Length: 338
Ligand code: KG4
Ligand code: ZN
Image 1 (tube, rainbow, N blue to C red):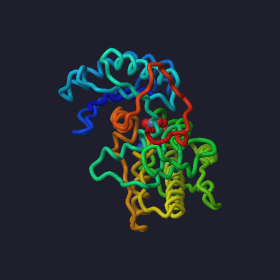
Image 2: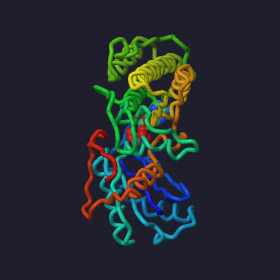
Image 3: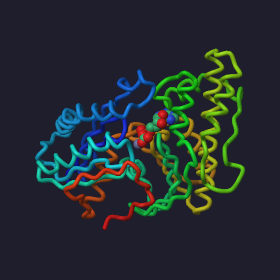
């Protein structure tokens, strides 16, 4: 089955072709970073308009790269949530319309399920069951995964998501947008332990997170120093250390609680180098295994949408003719394909 994946939930237009027999054939991505950078963050209306402008040429390019004609596509999978309503709507309308015009099947995909399954696109994918740390711009969740659609939420953030905390802190430190990668880059030049911030909610039981206090701690430190670039780098390093340590402690706790030794980490923040090495070191001590998507499949992309869609389409699931989007869609509401 040849599946076209369309991702438009936020500020990246991702298109991919996945063949259930041969694997991923091609994927292309257009990032809107330049369009949003002048505003210091994602502007939803600009995001929607840009998806509309780009999706057709990206789809053509993807088909060319894969050596396929559009009429060979058996099904179209597109993100329907969670995400920005307008942006989701552009991809859902495009996907549904393309499927209709090709006489292909159509399926709306859950963006976070797609992130969670992204490591399955790598060689030697993880076996079920595993614990998954989902860390993106809108989510920080620990999930026990027993199979596709079999998710148990173990922990969630009470306020900001980890990626959101990276973005807001970066903005406050004057590092601009996109905050996560910029803060991570400058943190490399920071001096270790010049500042030390608390590891929120690690000194009490439970698997929930809270990152908004860290933002305030970084702000207080920032106001206490003359704005020299070294101090900014030191604060960035301390902030990143605190987030990485907190996530690592909670992942270890979740694995112990579930008596599992396999951890998947997915979503944009999973591309953070320090997080990946801290989790790898923790799992080595536990004699466990860390599975991460390749860097380009941590952040938003079409490949994960095509893949997650293909799994459900193969099991017989299809969406109706109506275009429905779900900007808020808890992962725990997902069920196995019927
Ligand atoms: O998964 P994603 O591309 O979009 C959402 O579904 O939200 O994640 C984007 C988030 C942003 O908050 C971004 O700042 C963060 O991932 N991010 C990073 C890094 N790369 C992206 N955070 C920390 N370190 C990074 N290297
Ligand atoms: Zn995402």
